[in-house]
Amino acid sequence: MDAGEKKQFRQVAQEVIELTRREIQRLKELTRPIAPDGAIGRISRIEAIGEKSINEAALRTATSRLAALENVITQIDDIDFGYCQVCGEAIPHGRLMLVPESRLCVKCAD
Image (cartoon, rainbow, N blue to C red):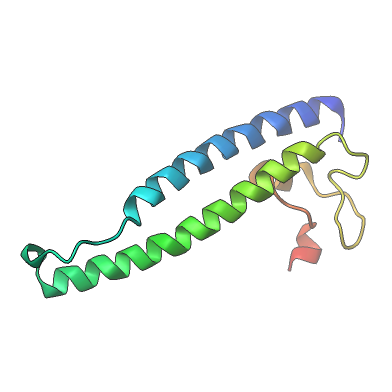
């Protein structure tokens, strides 16, 4: 990966990090405890609990992705950055731009 590609990658990764942080904040709001309010009704409460569970899973995923993205940002200048951790082949630039936290090439990720 040349210097221009690294600069472009760093910019994209920073944008994805910011979007992920905003998503985490949104999901934290959606996963607040559900008050046992009789006004919403039994079925609505069950639906709200189901939605909360889905949002909690999404929050865990987003938090994990943020950690991976922040880790990748610190490794951009490493000599082995952009190479698959399994086979050692270069990870295509397009894959890194779409999934900045990628540590595996497409073949090894399958």
